[in-house]
Amino acid sequence: MNRKVALITGGATGIGHRIVKEMAKHQFDLIINYRSNEQEAKALAAFVEEHYQVNTLCVKGDVANIDDVNEMVNRSLGAFATIDVLINNAGPFVFEYKNLVNYELDEWNYMVNGNLSAVFYLAKRIVPIMRQNKWGRIINFGYHLAETAPGWSQRAAYAAAKTGLVSLTKSLAIEEAPHGITVNMVNLGDIVHPWKEASIQDVAGLDSNNTPIGRLGTGEDIARVVEFLTQERSDFITGAVIPVTGGKTSFI
Image (cartoon, rainbow, N blue to C red; front, side, top):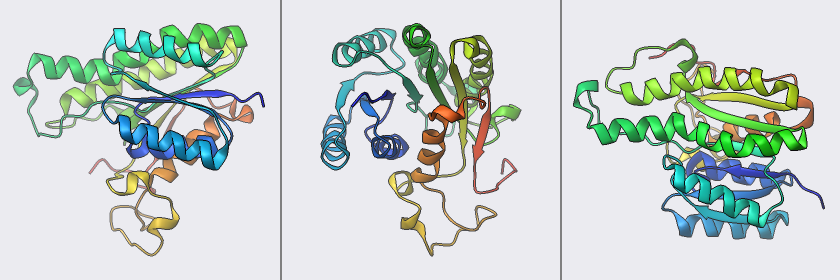
């Protein structure tokens, strides 16, 4: 079977894990990138190979490091003839609350490189392949209301990178539209562990006051939107920023 090939960064755990399962269900061959969770990546690959009969490759690499990105792509193209879909799920986050001036230089660089420059690194290698095929799908990720560039106290490095990614997404979408490539961004609501790998059914009956619809968000909510954006007939949607928030419209 001539399946399309999807590369999911940070695919071993969390929302990336759920996206891998959703893409496998729809018969994509999969490249599962991980930084440190090798055991989880290989277990997930074995699961989707057994249950969905797709081909997989697990590739280690830190998307914030351009040398790792180049090696990741080289290994991927050694196993598969092409990369049709790029899902930029990986992105570092500093969980400690810090004012901007308290960030160390290394922390700042890692946040910007991992959440913004990484998309450039991967696009630079993979978009030319998509152009040759006259088809491609790129999905990036942001946080709730990133498209409005809100101030986010003590999260300034992450917020700066992701709001920059909004503009990059829209710019790349315009540039690559003539080549049959769409580029979109999904902005997540407040989806926390253990629900990042959960299905919608898993939260049935669990009420939440954090969203207008009154239930918890899950990884499946995100994965289903991502898979839709990879479909052939999603080609009229490009340069879009799509909130998946359960109806929440305020930043707080």
